[in-house]
Structure formats: C-alpha cells, structure tokens
Length: 181
Image (cartoon, rainbow, N blue to C red):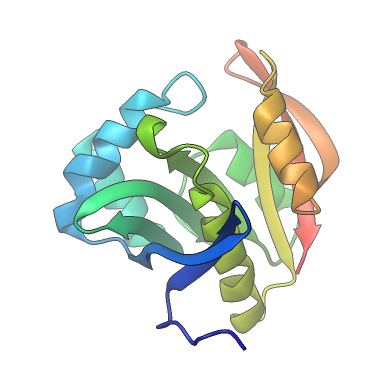
C-alpha cells in the first residue's frame, strides 16, 4: 500500500524505487526572479520575459505553478483560459478555434533539474487542474521549425495531437496541439 502524500507532492519512479519529489505550488511574486532566470535559460524555445511582462501574465494566468525544491524553483508552468488579455499569436489561434480551453503557454525545467520528471509532474498537475475546472481541452504548441523533437515526444506521450500549424514572427513554425481532458 502506498503512503499518502500531501496535496501538491508528486511521485515518480527511479531505479524501481518510489520516492516523493518536490512540492508543486502556486507561483508567488517572490518567485519571479527565479522564474525569469529559468525562462532566460530556455529563451531559444520561448518568448523572452521581463518582470513587467511576467507580472501581467501572472495576473492573467488561470494556472501558474512552480516545482519548489526547498526554496529553489526547479520548473514552472504558465497557462491561460479563454478570455485572457494575452497577445500571443498561438493563444489567439486557439481562441478563434475553441470556445473553451486551457492554453499551456510555457513550461520550463531548470537545466540542472532535467531528467528528474519535473515536466511530467507539472503536466499531470495541470491535467488534474483542467479536469477539476471543467475544461475539456488542454492546448499548447511547440516548435517544428526549428525542430524541438524532445517537446514533440513529450507531448505525444501525454496524448496531444496536432490540430494546425502556423508561422510565428516569420522565424519559426509551430505545431498547434490539443489534448482532451
């Protein structure tokens, strides 16, 4: 029998040994410095963020959670419901196509925390959040030009499927993805 864990604590399997890992919790303003640093680490896959933009996105987000390892943010995920004040062309595409959705804008895992399952922890958490919120579609996008095969494999694992493609800023092409909740 598995021991119960506090809400927000997740499990993963590593070398056939089950163990608790880091706390998933709502992001706070005191986390913004670490969130901005994580975003900067992966900016080649994401749009840049500064503190003003992050404050605005945080205020509009339906879901903005972090994985907290004793005060160090190992990962974060930022997502929006329909009707948010958000100028992303990918978010706008989903807003035109679906009356109700939860759009995953970005998930970032720290370089030093990769391979620990933090991204999967956050995706399991947002799927549960969407279900509890009565949302039937979880949406996102990832780059296909230039290619991001790790993200493609990750999203396929979680049951996302392509529903469209678009060029963004003339620089890259994205695969627009949906998963039923």
